[in-house]
Image 1 (spheres, rainbow, N blue to C red):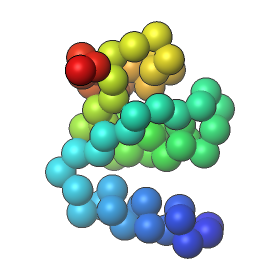
Image 2: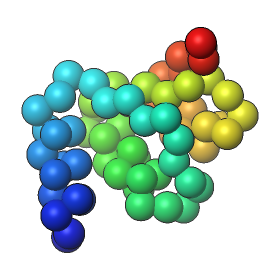
Image 3: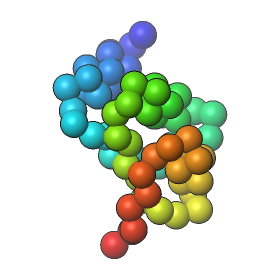
Image 4: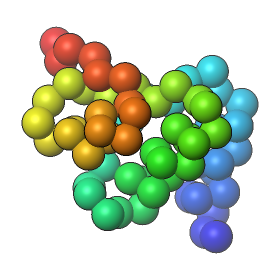
Length: 65
């Protein structure tokens, strides 16, 4: 695990919720988001077609402003 991944895991562990703007389907950020959701931590993202993958896995959609 690289430094960035360790940092993200630490921040996710101490945060009340996580906000992700976008995660490429099948990418590392999407894998991280799946971990966050599987641990019961709220994951928020923009409600747009580009984030369908995150919303389908359980992310909470927020309206883009």
